[in-house]
Image 1: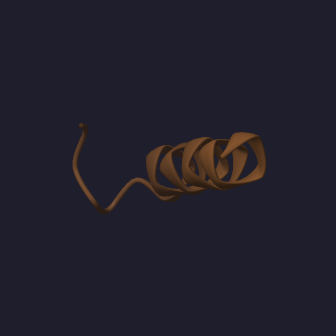
Image 2 (image 1 turned 180 degrees about the vertical axis):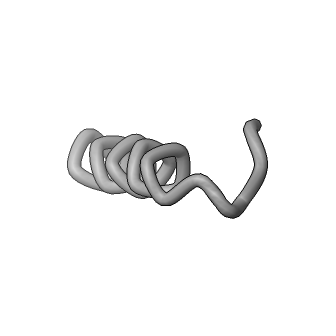
Length: 24
């Protein structure tokens, strides 16, 4: 994971988590 200062990286992680939740 890149620096937490990057909002884009954080958003990407959030999207991934949401996708996992939807698939679950």
